Length: 429
Image 1 (cartoon, rainbow, N blue to C red):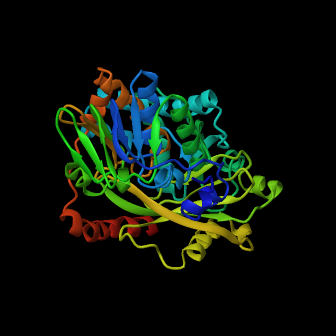
Image 2: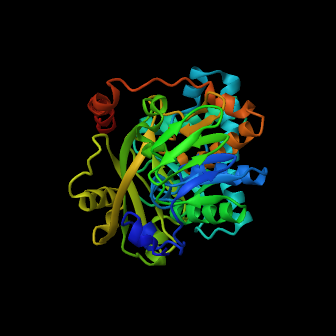
Image 3: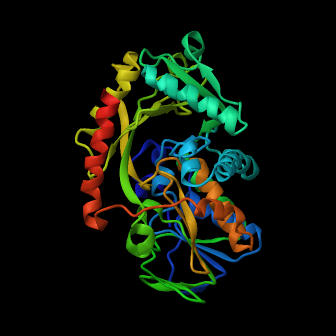
């Protein structure tokens, strides 16, 4: 076993700055438990903590290392809401359900804060999140969103910004308006994930790494088959997200892995960093193919953007991402990139999260669509509630309809690439 996180995770600034975490053994032979959780990311660990606190014997299976996937590589922004607009969710379900879902998204953000405080997780929490507008159309969209929240969802927390007010949070010639949410924030996502794993272990959860689930035998006493063993449980929680693969075919057909990418600049120094982002807020624009960025605890610019629907990493990633960063902050033209990395997130057709249950004892949460830092924790809580006998809140999510991607496993990628071309052109124009 080793605590060398950087050696066994994708080469990112997160891995280079991660806290020590002792490697955990793989499953050998037969293991029995009440609940088997497949996936050692934020969703799976959150479900495990909630279940263990309710008295269940829980096993978590992680195919690689804890936090190896999207949970340990993301932009780290903790934001209320969902990847699709809340009014779209109201159209897909009902206004009453949309109101419940908005309130649950606020609970999700508070849950991140609560777990950081309760478990003493050192993950560089910073408060404040900012949506920014590049075009007049964006300004109008942000104003409409704020008005909808106030009039329909009883939420008047967000603050519209322009001119001097905007420059108090961000100093960039690219943006002409913004919407500030003091409830949101940002964290070091890998350290947050590792902290949840430590909290789960302290609660009695057994976590196995390098234990890839190869097959689920369903039934009254389901079994998860692995290369060198098996886990027998009463309930199964599937939290594989973008790494799910064909393990559960009816779930795999409703999500698609999409590549997303981030760079870390060399350290800027505190004065230079705060000149760009004076309040240390996390920032995202509202283009369909968006840019998102924030400062690290050691005053680097962590800048994310670009997406790959082909599954292939874009060529010259570090330099192309550096150019995007400089377009936002021209004063960083002389700054070098220390790390560039990417990974897959899972998206749904409608970009709404996909939670629910298959049969009587297989629960799942997926489809966070790049908006999972907060909602993953809520997903784990709702699944635990359902397993404990109260599925009312999980059922609200389950009422969101989800279509399969057209073209099946092999043709869905080119189909989506063609569809996304329209949105890229719309952003440019």
